[in-house]
Length: 116
Length: 111
Image (cartoon, rainbow over all chains, first blue to last red):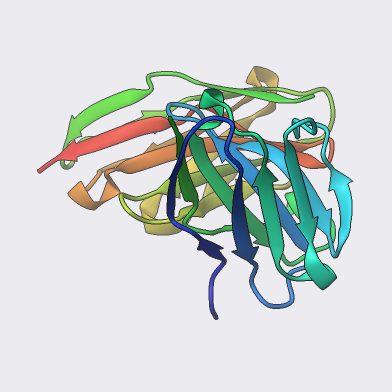
């Protein structure tokens, strides 16, 4: 079975620029997550989708971050404008069960963002 | 909201040594507990999980973890490590419809 795909793998931008990340979850997985992992810390949930609806976006900085899940499959995460503190690895994960967090989450390779 | 504490963020040990990584959590409700591992250059992957039942959980590659409710702990153990166990290990607590991760333990096994 194919895993969670993410692109790009690396991105370097200047502050105040915009950037977008793409995620394709495992086929048939209802729940999709975006996490932010800052160096030296564990992943922090930004947003959780169940099919194409948002379940939890309480930790998403909505003034600059946005995300959508197209037709309940692929998802994009956008940052506009980027700040230095947004430098991190952005992980996408998916889960088969609609209850999401309680079941195994499968992670993609991540996108390493550097904001200069 | 739940939180997770992992100590000794950097651990260096020799092959065949025993490994124990501590994990303490804070959450008032029923928890589900996980250990994830990230090998160099690879994705985060599930090592083991606890939902209910036997508090001693066995995972892949000889790892096990024990849930001690009274201590709010879910420590990870392996009796004899190998060089291939070099990785970053994350404890996570599921509750309130989300997973909360600890800061991780960077483990380096010296051949």
